Length: 281
Image (cartoon, rainbow, N blue to C red; front, side, top):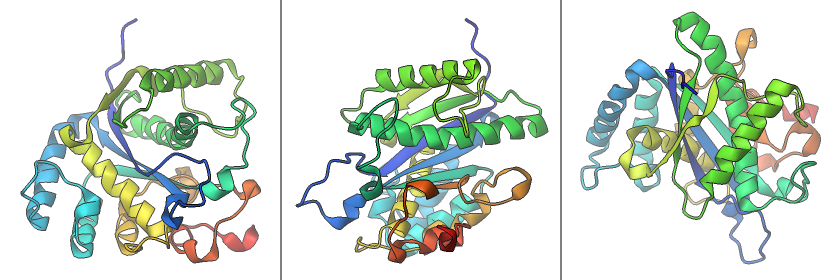
């Protein structure tokens, strides 16, 4: 099989723990899990390392070769968010409130393991990323195919992840998806072009960390570092859906979905900023 030349590179990182087993000793901030995705046109990928260097310079983060968002001061978090929002990228975030997901049973999976839960969340964000790339490729005149770079997580079985993505691709082509409101667009996600890399070695994953961590801290009122402003500063580069031009349930996706439940009132602000309407739930 001859693989397509990717038109885009997608970097994906996470914040929080995908474990959903409830523990009486777990701190309240563990109730959230977020994914961040950064889409870069393939011809711009060589520029990504330069962007990280710019961020390291403005934050004076010179002691290590990589950038870790959580180690930055609030002022520097705002600086890197502004810098990322100034670049030619498209951003996606998914935030899952795990308290609502513990009782959820997938028709295909039953009660989920942490790996299955991570893959489940990944499916939602990839459905939206691939829809955006398929549409944008027609404007850019490039292949819609993406190379997907995942941040390496200790203990996660990435062979199972790739097999899961292959299964979703097959079901999308055959029209047999169990959840079919959206789908991962065939010929955009190419499982054979999915790779796993250490966060410290890939500049694009450090950008995805900014997105995932900014929304983790914005959603999570129990965190001592709870803050909305960095996630808000990413607004100009957060993806919008088609002609509707809204972020909610596309650039920013909240789990639970509306029919599955809601989230605490004191954690709704960042979602309202991006267009969610909790009064209708």
